[in-house]
Length: 180
Image 1 (cartoon, helix red, strand yellow):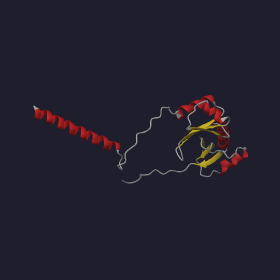
Image 2 (spheres, rainbow, N blue to C red):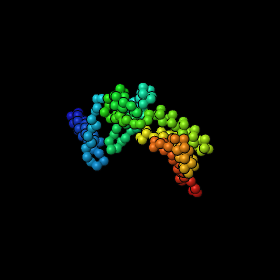
Image 3 (spheres, rainbow, N blue to C red):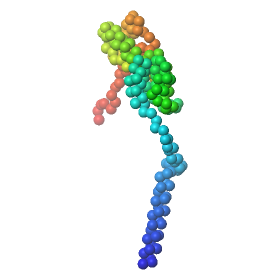
């Protein structure tokens, strides 16, 4: 009986030692350095999608878009055409969100885009429009690689502005097509 108890205690001690080594190995990174546990932040960061929806809802005439930068440091940029700081602080006090004053709101760019679309299509050109919140700008995408006629039409209509950018679609060739 004494041998069974000693054997059981020895087995448990070996299992405990093996579990301890396994836990230490899991705490070490691939290069052998110990990993530091992630610090726990008691504050919940604001959700960029939620802030974007709130800004669009509360400030439809001044909200200029939102985008996330990863480098050189993480930040969420929220554009407003008026009262940028005050507008953002009504939505969040999270320091990772930064208000930026821009010349046009998304609504302004959409209105200008409707006119641009009419002018370009009246010249028989096929286009697609998009808004770039980083600039902010209105991009006019053309199927035709020659963008000069569209630029001339916009200039004639008084819409040739620095924030209206005319570009041609890039032709993308599928890869991996061919004989196998």
